[in-house]
Image (cartoon, rainbow, N blue to C red; front, side, top):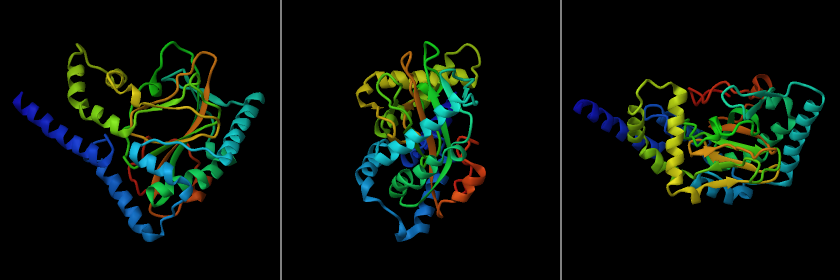
Length: 312
């Protein structure tokens, strides 16, 4: 028993140190590799890093809190263009959405956002790429992009509509783009800034061991996830609700956020919906390989790259 307690104490200490240093709860053995890659990217670009003064305040807010937003006439036009193409596909009777097996409140777009929407290319080559290059001070690359439609088909939220962290590399930036107007009733993204999420994570190992040990039978991954999500929600409701950022905004609103900050997707009111695209973005040690996406698209092929230097 004593040996187990010592192992837990050592493991928890290493995990917490890595979490604070690397902004990632994926583990102290894996997390450093990605931050080291960011250092490599910055060394490769040297003094040639491109910054965009138009995003100075948004980059500063993002670096401090792990969430920000911006919108322009360009992002509005591009977002509405994508929404119009989706509406045309639906009107023509094309297979447009696939309802998620794990959550029937969420429909995933049936195609590939890079291949199907020229507007996505303009978003990534333009405002989103400029913001990320200014934040990372490196070149940029995109691991995947997914389009989702949120509706209320059940009484309770599930899956990504519950408080969670993506548990990916600390250098990953999620960028959400609203394709439709999103008000309070349309299921806006909610994010708990990193500085408020961190203390919850630091208490998590002991709390989860205690909760899991209370179970009288082995729990599968889905059951364990539900227990973890309940822990996160209880912690937020216990005194952090006023720090939650509820990201409403009209079509064309762009929302970068840390993939490891606690967040949850929209759970719209009955009769309301939200359509958005989410990109998982990374620094790159060389200029963006746009030709790669022309061949491979941006379809999701994993939660995060096993090798951050991979060409994608």
